[in-house]
Length: 152
Image (tube, rainbow, N blue to C red; front, side, top):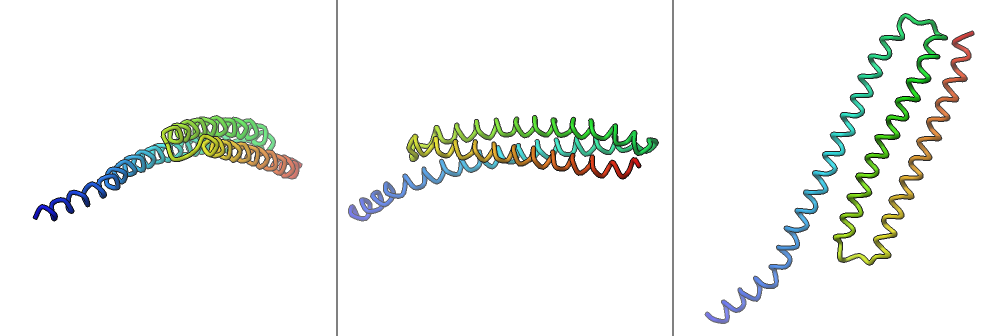
């Protein structure tokens, strides 16, 4: 009887760290999911606000000539692009802060690994920003080129 109790107690002690770790991991996972859902909702609201702004702007274009439309559209697009850049920068700052916080609390990774992860994240962000800027410039060039045909 005593041997069974000792065996059960030993098994319980062996399983306890796994249970505690699973609960801790579940809390971290829940926290990350909550953070991601908040970001998703914030992004959805931002996109919807820009769509609404675009709908209202298109209504103002109905009574304009093609030349006037082009004159009005270009500043509107530039304004929206700058708003998107600011929004993306704000989201990046939240993401990098959350990443640094999570890495700071991670005891399994060495400092070199943590700095490598942060560096990778920052490099990806820089590449993404450069790509979006390039796409925007190319789109503007196409629109300017096509607008030449609309005006004449």
